[in-house]
Image (tube, rainbow, N blue to C red; front, side, top):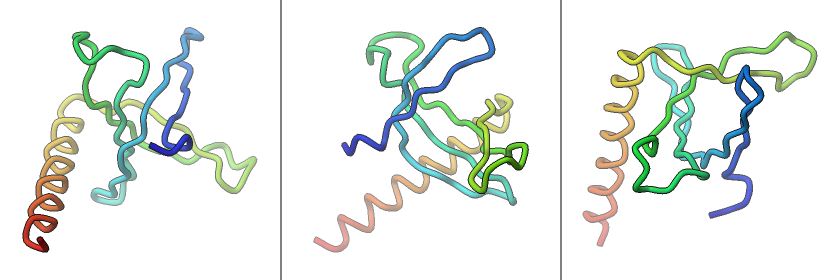
Length: 97
């Protein structure tokens, strides 16, 4: 993976987490980013896909935005759409072979 596929975020309590960026999805006018935790072992119960919504920042910069967790019901819906996209891409690759 390219080095720019990783992002370190800091929560409100000052804890830092490293995430591996997987994809960006636009759904109903909202932008969602899909990540995997890069600093958690795959066997850890906290390991799994994390979906964050990109929201506009305070306007100080052209690319200002911040990430916020999405409610569980939205996360499940976005996760399902993401998995459909992944399986669709795999099927297309198989058909090309």
